[in-house]
Amino acid sequence: MNTHRLRRDRLTFFAYISTAGYVWGLYGLGPALLLLRDETGMSRTVSSLHSSGTAVGVFLVGIVGASITERLGRARTIGIGTLLSVSGLLLIGFGGKPAISIPGALIMGFGGSLLLNGVASFLSEHHGVGGPLAIGEQNGVGTLAGLLSPLALGALVGLGLNWRIALMISPLLFGLAAFIRRGAGSLDIGMHAHRASSGRLPASYWWAWGTMTFCIGVEFSFVMWAGDVLRNQSDASVSLAAASLTAVALGMTAARFLIGILLRRVALDSLFLASLLLPLVMWVPLWLSHNSTLMLLAMVTIGLGIGFHYPLGFSRLVRASGGLTDRAAARSSLASGLAIGLAPLGLGALADAVGLHTAFIAVPVMLALAITITVTKPVPSSALAG
Image 1: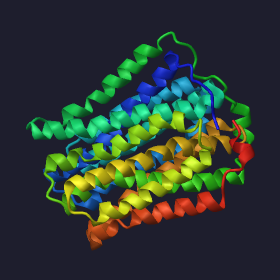
Image 2: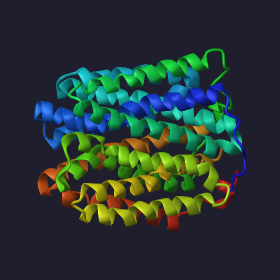
Image 3: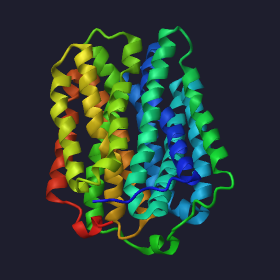
């Protein structure tokens, strides 16, 4: 258990707000694509290719991200990631056709993954044993942005305004983060370039990596399809469906700000396992209901479970890595890329073939696989000792 108290300095807040800038655009992508589908008439499968584009970008970072960070340092890598993520978001929102918006999603995924890996590695090194708490708060701030982004998009639609205005909050948040960081110190603390370039990640890392892959697949299945599930199974309006991801994000935000409290009382692996079981149980009423209010409540509870997955899962990866923090973070992008690319795309293609209701059974299957790995291949307690 972790009793460390965080000392949040300007660089910590820079990391938090940078995360919020990227997640604002990322979580706006699901409802934005729902609205783009209505504008352009593209199919669910074509719409899912945007998620695949993001996944390819993230996956590429898993291959080359460690080398980029070792060569350029975290600070420059985070800067490049910021510029690329904003550029990709603009191409998605204003490209006007899939031939432009899908490559934009790739650019956004590549840049955003460089950014998130960099700030997460920094927080882990900067806060030491308090790293899981800092990463939890980082994800909490990001998820709060994810809560507000689809809500803003839905509100603009309801008011008859252009939903693209909401996407412009993302570059504004990045500008605020850059202002806070000025003169605040180095982001390159604790880099182990030579060690990371020659060390091999242990087997325990890769089992934890497999669990993360399924967790991220579950999260992005909801990010991309929660609005469509609500609209498909109930009489929800387009604006309510576009804003429905806010229900998932609300639960996720609560979870990520609860991490610091719960880790002082509950072992990390136990909390992680409970977080896998909760959405598995709550998926049942979501899948069976046709009432929009009940479905939204189920989404909040599912989000509460999902909210623990990434920060706890990332902490498990770092602590199972044998000190190879930057390499562990970079390789985590392989998990993210596979999950973001295959899970929503596969679900979308399956939905076109058999209907979204039947296709959504893929979600509890992924959760069951994550639970099986967690129970049978836990991260050794020595690796989890902070």
